[in-house]
Image 1 (cartoon, rainbow, N blue to C red):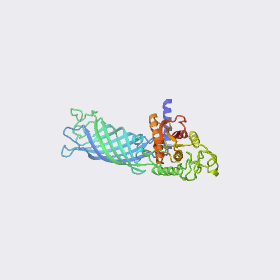
Image 2: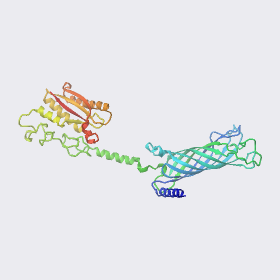
Image 3: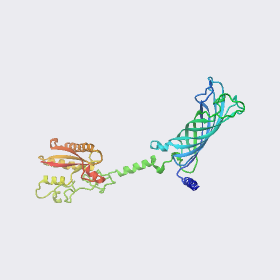
Image 4: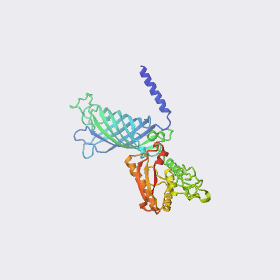
Length: 431
């Protein structure tokens, strides 16, 4: 008894919880009309048309949530003979069903490709009767029966209040005494006038209909079309988000670094910057690289950033390379250099032109995301793309070698910033 009371209390609490949910409407009224087809049993020689226009239906549906519900419906119609191919018969019917509903459109996430098409599966028991005035055996003309019905209902959303319905249902009768045409008693021999024996032979028939659903309630949408948590954005929301992304990707100062990560939004034209858009001063002499005639050798501003005493340029160039001042960076899974870092190629090219006895090795790297063999090939492609840039500036191909080294395991692969530093091409001076 305690378990029964507990179950009742749970059902009551669930019911109140359902009623409190106002995110979507739950009730709908439905009307349809179309075709029927009695399959078997029929008296030998009696035939029915493939599509017999003669069925109307009405229903009321309640959805517990966006996936499951219940429906009560009724159907009325008339079976007739295939004219010209069968003796005449007229059988009227009525059926009443209680059916469970599965919203296959939500279960299989139709919303991932459309928000206007849906599909319901329904099935459940019912009762009904057939009426035929031509029965030759019993003294009553109504054949009571029970049945199981099931089918699929396609939906086209017209607006938030109406949906177009197309349904195919199959009905399996039990306790059916007569054939669909009403001319034969199913259990031979023919019964006496007072015979009330019950026949349990299964009769099978189907209906195909078109109809409309009208959604009741004060919410904006019905459970058939409700998306929990607005999982899929509308076109207007997507357009707004795309606009925000475009604004974020603006590069107002033209240094190759988008505004949303640029820590120096007003970089002078032609300045060499780091991944955060900050102007570089590679030799730390207070003169930015783009104004420094000796960017890797400290010197006073009065001498354009070059030392007054003669200094071996190659040694400072090696130092700049060894300390990581000259690198070309790449986006994830890309062999195209990021714009902000291509100035490193210009510095290397100018150095090689001033020092014709020096050769350079171009070394490509990748981060640790992805297969190792793929990253090795990607690092080679990155090195080759920088070689092509150097050749395009007038450096002889014979003075350049290149190699891909695959993954750079020296950085923390769990850090996005570290992985960006790993996606690079660096240089090595070869005398």
